[in-house]
Length: 505
Image (cartoon, rainbow, N blue to C red; front, side):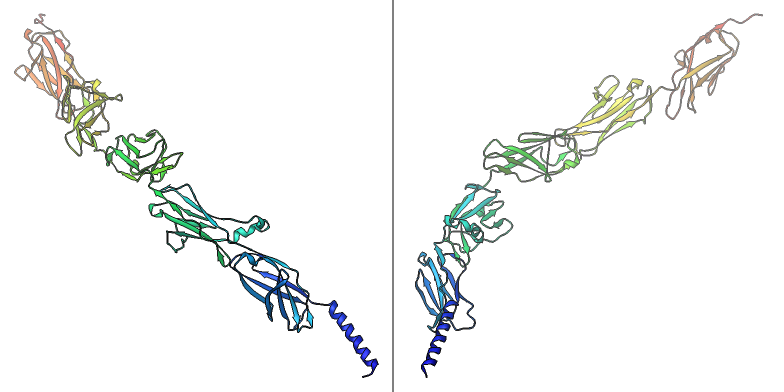
């Protein structure tokens, strides 16, 4: 080869070397899963030679400027960062058969931190009471220099455990609810008492388990609901329900029936631990329970429900004999009939002001019967009866019955011819009764009832006296009798029959 050809080759090689020097590929180091990891996590470093084409590279790995890992033919290495020692500045470089190299990548800082501790808190403080809601919160400590990665907190997953040696993780259920870092136990029961602990998981590692916390569960103060008188109760009675809470004080009481909270009303009276129902009716039947509420824990105590059964009081019916209306002078019998039970004592009432009747000359009481003799118009009114007993049901009241009293039909007496009359004449007396019919007539001279004779002739409503003499002079009156009611008329007014001696012409 001539000297000219050699110079040309050297010139071309210098150009090529200058070009390669100016276009050295750029290496970029990527860290996964993150530039901040916890001890024990697996870290993957990837060396990306940009603009390298399909050349066969070998890779060099550096930590803090020193070779960290043997040269590889793959662009990725993984190692377990078990210690904080693995923190440092990591970089990489690519080579091709020792003739060409990439730039060394910009160093990436890998921070390896010890796993944080987890702490378990319980709200409210233990002991808790049955029925309460308990929140257990798993708090994982963080590092101040993670400020820019505050969202990292939300990457934690939480596991909850119960029992001293239990490896059984708690699952969400009807009473157990897990919401990120909080386990909620609703309606605590005695079997919830135990050791609880938690831990946090992130990626492939978990925090050390928290110290176990013992959850102590005590029975809430028992509430007992008593009912007076005993169920079943009877309509019209007064019922008292009392809520007795065995421990603690300063309770506020709530009363409920069939899940509806009761308020004071005309018939319902609440006085602290006592609910009074006056004038019980059938719709008061149902399930009743009470609850105590307090400002301090335990702040609630609920009784079991008590069934209040309401039965109709024995019905009383009042009968009147004879049927109303009745007539003055008649005898009236009122009878109080109570359909069930026995040994009743009977009370009788008259008028809208409920005046209790007492035995008198005209009023006679005989157990279930009131007799009124010689009824007068003032006896008209509303009557009702009540049974009283020593055992429950101890009262039964009838509906009122109206007693209507009418005067007996009036009788009037006429005489033909007009008085005075004369001996030897014939006199006709006529008895007129204003209402009703089918009367039988009675005739009286003074207080002696007259019968038909030779001189006295009775024809229904007429009395004829023939051949008068002076002994016929007297007071005469009449009245009617019949088979139906009214069975008697009033006595007619008395008429004086004056008889004079024989008229001489």
